[in-house]
Image (tube, rainbow, N blue to C red):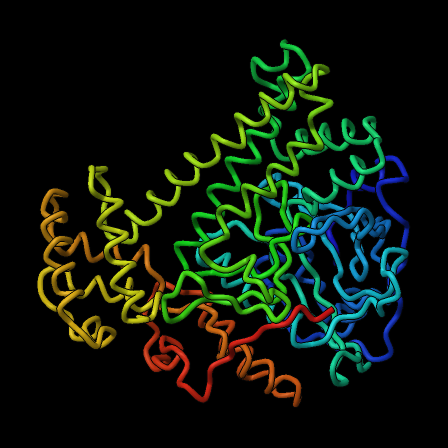
Length: 494
């Protein structure tokens, strides 16, 4: 059933990973399978059998051609450096080449205690598996670079966190699982050879243009500086997209920062409802380090840690290497600001760039903050307010004066676009989702699944697959949580 594996990561030097065979589970049962993604990856769906698939996706049988490994990495966790982390409950089966010619990792998450587990059980509870499945696939449908969910199985075991919970395993697909923390692992050991090998691997896999361009004929340090620039550019674009959706990652440690520029590791993540830039959901982020408003600058901080690992490759003269790398990290600020403003212009139905656009965006956000207006609804309802007042939008603002004043400014700006109101409305609906993975709805699906009712999970999965298109009969999925439904704390599941 599986496509042919390649083993590029497993063919790196042995200090990059630990061989690990997934630990069998007693009663694997397939509870979710992403057929469109499987087809994209080249799976033989004609030979698909749910019971057989459960065995594969539980790790009870290793697919032919796979050589499972747990990857080594380090990381700054809430600002504190830990020199040895690694895949404590995940195993990389290998890579496959999808139908578009792209190399994709296939990883089992929750496959048992690896040599990197540090005393943990290596398992995953059902709740975090379903949360990652729903949110990662929801993010993909929203157009955000992300790891994907291919399958989920229950294991027939109970795992113990605060209370015993059903066990599960997620099959995750990624452009790669290379992290800032992967580079930090070798930098902490002074292993320059490994850093060079890893950087070359990252360039070949994610930025092959750096080998094919004019950089190929220039001094070696230029290539590694260009790698830093390329990663920074992707991270700036990713952070801007998060901010444009009200998404809060929750645990932006350097070991969760993908070199490929994908959203990686959905632990205590959530989508903000009432707009407040200081919003935090993660139960372990007591100081608000990874609050919504901090995400762009934590991304820059993570990139600075990445830059530190590359200094010996960028230039043998340390002062010159620091100067060149610092310029890249400083340039991130402008890259992020440009990416964010492009995202927000699109959310306001604007194509042309004009002075004053930033102030227009900030004025709306300030008005939303004062009213604690729902982030997603506020932008979505703009499509109804292009030519006249929209009752749905006004209901989000108890004091209508502020939003009415802003609407006058916005409509004046729309006039300079010189297109029909219907085209503006279409732009707005294409840019602003109607459905997002709202925290209370995700939790309701999890709670039902823990009682072996996967109906709410399946329905929510269907809704999130088409986030911009109105789905009659599913109006409840557009609404923020009622006071008694609010889920204000989220958890990692480890």
